[in-house]
Length: 135
Image (tube, rainbow, N blue to C red; front, side, top):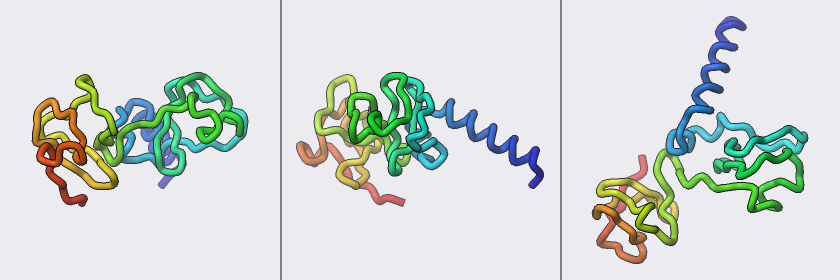
């Protein structure tokens, strides 16, 4: 591979990284930057890879120890997708209900919603979900 080809690939990855929605981004957390404590500016909305989980900055901040997710929880938002599927939250509101046949993660298991506008977790209403095999 030539230097120009490598640069073109890198630029393509950066473009895809910035334009990817959260579901797609969750399938490749390794292409997102990690915190280094080097003082660089992280813009609000920028996603980072934090131990394999994607987080989004809720405000402009500096990459510094006092702004790390473990210390400054309010500066970071968890991206609620894993491997392209939403993580089923403990409380599902009407606006975040799962559609019929939508897949979601619950306690490290993948489930398919058997209801339209499903606002129940697999624990609260098991009949509303079907466990799927993870490939």
